[in-house]
Length: 112
Length: 116
Image (cartoon, rainbow over all chains, first blue to last red; front, side, top):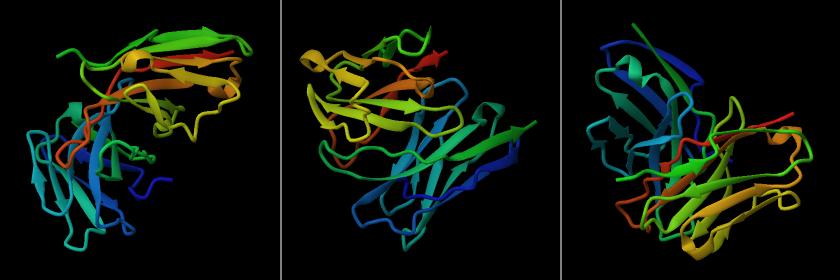
C-alpha cells in the first residue's frame, strides 16, 4: 500500500508556481521521498527525490519539512505541458530489493 | 541514449486467449520492473528482476501471468489465459544498480491491452 496522501486534483494558472503537497507521516529515517509524473498516454517520468534537505533540479524543487512528515513539489513556472498526474512516493534507498509503490497521485491541470 | 523499448503498443484479444509483451531496458540497467496500470489508477508492480533473478513477484497472479528475463537483458511478460480484468497498460521500467544518489526508474511508453 502507498504510504503517502495527496490531493486528488489541483489547478494552477499558466506561468504561476504550482505547489503540490504530499503527506508521509509514517516515513522512516531511511526512506527517501520521490516524485514522478505521468503525462497522458506516457509512462511515468522521474522528477526529483530527497531525504532531508531541500532539493532543486532543472525541472522542480522539493521542500521537505524538518520532521519529514510532509513535502511539497514546486514547479516554478507552470506551462501547459506540466498538465499530468503527479505521484509522491516514499522508498528505502538500498542496493537492489526495494520497490517503487505508486498511489493514485494528484492530477494537476494547468489553466491557460 | 535509447530509452526503454516496449512492444506491441496496442493489443486487442478475446478472453481466454494468450498475449505476450516484450521489453528491452536501457543498456546496462540491472533492475527491470513490470507494472500494470488500470485506467484511473496508479501503476501496480507485478514483478521486479535484478539481472535475471526475481526479486519480488508477490503481486503477480501466477496462475495466469508469467515473466522471464533471459540473460539479464530483455524481458517478456505473458498472460494465459486472459481475463476481462486484465485490460490495462503494461509498463516496463529499468533502473541502474542502486546507491544513495540513484533511484531513478526509466519507463517505456507501455503496452495497452484490451480484453473483449
